[in-house]
Amino acid sequence: MVQGAKEELERGDAVQASEKLYKAVEECSKVLACLHDIEECKRAREEGEWWTRLLAKAARRLSSILGSQLIIDAWSQGFDLHVHGFHEHGLSKEDVEISLPVVKKLVEYTAEQLEKEIKRAHEKEA
Image 1: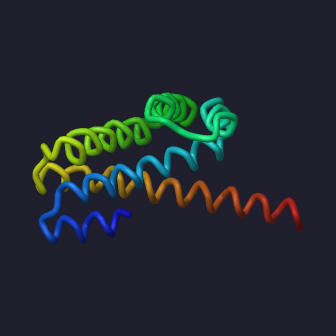
Image 2 (image 1 turned 60 degrees about the vertical axis):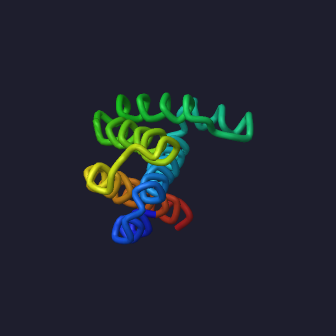
Image 3 (image 1 turned 135 degrees about the vertical axis):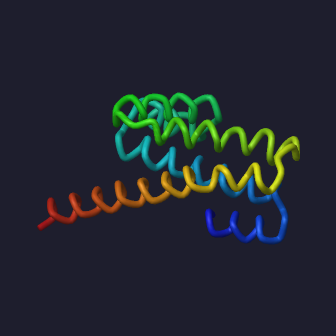
């Protein structure tokens, strides 16, 4: 999704780039919430869906649990992109580009966490 956002920005489409970056943050937040088995993941499973307030709570809880501002910072920027960039068409290409590094960092962090969990699962099986 980050690469797709970069391509949209190259075409000058800040609106679609905003939404792609938001979706990257949203999906990372869901993955991390479920990897850490926090209450928000359990609730989303029970109700069969996520909504933005639940995602925001998950980002805050994860930042607290992990002792890192990365998740809450990425969520804040992602939600801003979703509202002001996608829905309101209010962000320029340059505005959207500012959020690329933090979203990319969250995607990389999430991939690392997922890889560690897969490795732990394989070690348990062995």
